[in-house]
Image 1: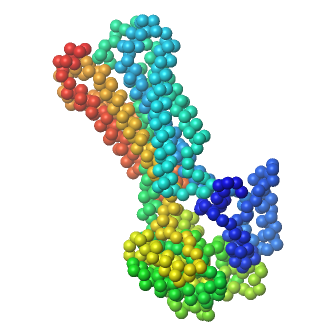
Image 2: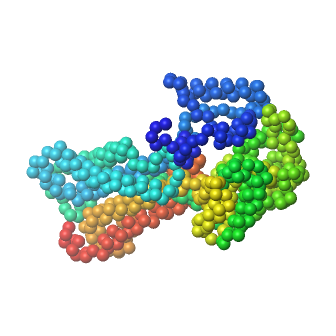
Length: 630
């Protein structure tokens, strides 16, 4: 393994490895229905993934033919290491890449028309230089050089901000990536960014430089402080403003959808308690707790000890791994026959206080009692979705019926029937966006399915972090040779499921805010320059009777045309691109009219303010001085 190797499957970093025979119960390794084992393989040189998939699929069909009861619904797949993570984030990273590209286009257009307006202010200088014999090529090189200098300075500043931003996101832990995807500044990415800076300089400076080099000396007599921009130049500038507004509308729409998605996820009801809930797990020392009886005795003693700690309201134990990390999924059967569609059902073994501690609502029947022990009839509580799948209708007929965990071909005896005694509400252990088929859950009494790995849920009356040390010390005194792990709060676990949505909301929000700022500055600069060049015209209008309000309306009308055009074009583009965001949004449609309307108002308001400020300044100029200056 190369230096820095930290695992291949789990997003957590692996620090040491154990033989699978020592770590995994033998019963799981010998059971053909075990589905929780990953197989890693290195392909031979020249063998494509598709060829390996075809060979593995043939093996799967052969196993299904030899052991139909065990492998009838088995599906074997081959994928490169990390492909599941890449597939999960492909759509989101594509969105972020497009958002960054839009922001780059906005900056490029912004620089282009600001250079055009600045060029208009230098028109006298350029024509004078042409009249004195300056070559057009020299003018073109100078103007392109100025654009290159401006954008390069911005690129250097942006590189520094990028380094700081990456460190900020890494320290803030807004998002958890797999261990083999380090969050750091990559030299290749910086090189590409610098290349884009040079490309931006060329694109944004080409049009102003071309216009500047076309200025002729014969027009020198026409230069005056009060000249009005030509129609062609005004149309080009208006077109650039409209393009920038359209790009910004697309970017702000994406940002609004991502922010609303994250807000909906945070507010969503997952069906269980998340606040003030500390979770941890303990792996019981097999030398100290070798039998189910000693393990259950530890549960009783540890529960009493933890419940007596100050600040603790309730305690519950789960045999195995606490959701959302679940025990291996199992297939269910009814009357000995495997039930189609129930080949992978989540199994949990919990104590009698679990449902109250997790605040999972009881829909019908009862939950577990202390009397549901290892020597009593086997009972289960099932989720509403599983009750409907087993009994049909609304699932109320499931109470009193029985099911079995489907028999493995190697088992000498059929599994004992399990009677359903209660139905609870569906719980979204894997998050609100998970496939609803994962709502198939059934719960067994912990005494009927003990496990040396025990998860602990503690409800506190304050921040669980303040009591974590006390809880760990108490367990350490009780079982000093049994290690604690998987220590976190339920809110932290749920936040990990929303990490990608939080990252997308943060980044698209920052990109959208930057785009709005650039548009506002750009529109203000364009309108301010246009008003300055039209002072003589506006002065004449006021001299012949135009009121200040008329001047404001005139300037607002000229400035709002490209603004409204850009909003309409941007809205049309956002509607056309809505399908790209379908897999990323939750609780809001990609074509949501409220989002589109909000983005339109968000664009329109600062744009009109940017138009109004220069117009108001024009009405406050001294009319006599304006006319004298022209």
